[in-house]
Structure formats: structure tokens, C-alpha cells
Image 1 (spheres, rainbow, N blue to C red):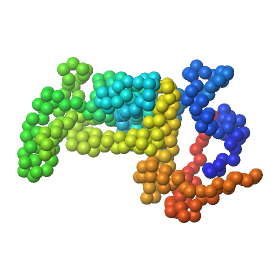
Image 2: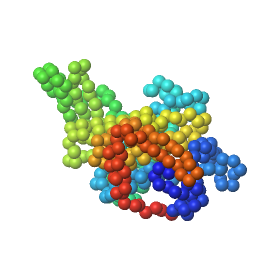
Image 3: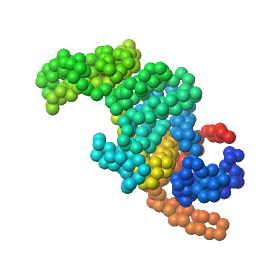
Image 4: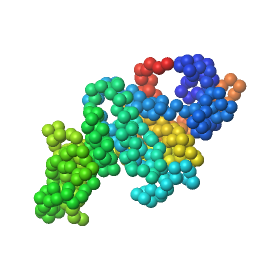
Length: 375
């Protein structure tokens, strides 16, 4: 009603498959969560079946549609997080790192755009399923953008031979954290002495980078480029390492670590934003399938918020605002609702302090060109 839809029963829908289907309410969505996988339109009860592959593809398509022109390069950030269990649910396991019973969903972001939210049990490696998601997402991107350069970025939990090997065979670059060990630290002994000398002279944290080739004793199939950060701080030595398929001729060691790898921390803010403000942790259903749908509902809410941030809030003071700020200042407006036989009257509060901002958002959204709707 608020956005001008005058056809709540669906008689004049654009897509043929949607004609005659009313808007879904909360009860319909609840039945969708409880529908078993084998149900169909012929089932007597709970016959609303989610097309999981279509839902997964939607997030990639929404990301691709957000660009007017193909970018030269994109970085796909992979990261798991904890989603605490509410009771004795299917997939319940104790996760030692997070010290709780939880799920371990896998997220994929490109900048602020969400491409994947996959619910998983927590009794697995944090990188489990990464190759499968790459096999699904990368072809969809290259179908639309055949010449784009794709870089996979992740912490040391994703530094796995199958992941790196797949990337090398499929023209995907990677920048991954690498867990330190005695062999790696031995490579940066001289650099660490230089950093310590600089720290003792200035009293400020100092770092020196070293670019070298490294191969594990048994797990890696080949030698790869490693960048070591020999850093000395007030607490002492603080060495860090990353492995990358990007050559030293493409990017030097320091910017590869400081500008490319360290920027992955922004993805963690996006995950927190969805979990804290868009209820991604409301996975209290008994089955993994139902909880996956709930995670997707939250993910759809994030996509809508991101589109509002990208388009509606462009050029405003809130164009970099988080979801809770947008909801508080833009979406939560005091109003009186009066229902008559002919109309529903919605009177917004005159004292609403963001009236000018709301008008600008509306104008920005009105300028959006119409997009073709697939059959």
C-alpha cells in the first residue's frame, strides 16, 4: 500500500507465473519454513516449496544488477561466523573456537554486497564448502562479466590446498592469511631485527615486509608467493604472513598486505550489521532447512537495505549509515492509521525531523530507470 501497489490479490502481476497469487503474509512464510523438501503443489498440507537454487542465484543477480558497467576487478570476501543454537536443534554441535553450541554459516561479500549466506553445522572446518560456492558463483559472474578479474580474500582458515588449487586452475586470484610457523618466522629474522631497531629508536610500532617463495613440507602442491610482515610493537614481536597468487610485478608486498588483505576486516562489519540489526541469528526452528530459509529472509532484508543505501541515500548524510540507523531515522515514522469503508488513511507525524531527507530519498528512488522483468 505504501509503495503504491494497488493489486494485493495479484490479478495483474507482470510475470505469468505470479498472476492470481496474493502477497505473502507471515503465516505463509511460516508454512514455507515448515514445508518438507519432497512437497509439491499436489500435497494436501504445506505445499509451498522454496526454490533454493533460485534463491541462491538471486543474491548474485542482485549484485550484478547493481552495476551499470562491468568493473575491472572485484574481491570476494569469504568468512564464517557463529550463530548460537537456541536449543536441541538439528545440527547442534559445540564449537571450540567460539566456546558455544552454534551453527557456522558461511558468508560471501563483495564490498557491501551480499552474495551468499550458507547455514552449516559447526563440526566442520571453517572453509568447508568454499570450493562449491566458488564453482557456483564464479560462472554466474563471468556469464555476465567475462573479462572481470576476480580475487578471493580470506583469513588463514581459508588457506587450504583445494581452494588455492581451484583458483589457480580457474583464473581466480587469491589473497589469504597464512598461519605462522617456525619455518616462516625464520624467513623474516633479519626483517624483524630491522623492525626492532626502528621501534627502539622511535618508540613507535615498526614493520618491515619481506617477499619470498614458500612451500609447505607436504600439504601444498607447489611453491607460492608469501609476504611476511615483521612487526615489532610494545608487546614485542608480531609477525604475520599472507599467501597470494598476485605477482610482485602486479603489486608490491606492503600494499598487498596493508591495502588489499587488511581491508577484509570491513566484511566483518557487514556480518555484524546483519546479525545484530537484521535478525540473522533468529534461527530457532527445529530443522536446518527451515533455519536456512530464516537466514535467507534476513539476507533479503540486508539486500534491500543495501539497495536503499546505494540508491535512495546517495548524496545524503546517511549514505554510509548502518542498517539500524537507517531503520531508526528513515523507516520508523510515527503515524496515525484510520480505516474507512473506502480508504485506509495514513497520517504521518508533522514533527518527523527527517522530512527533507525522506523527500530526497523518494526523489532518488523515482529517478531509477525501470528494469526488464524476466518471465
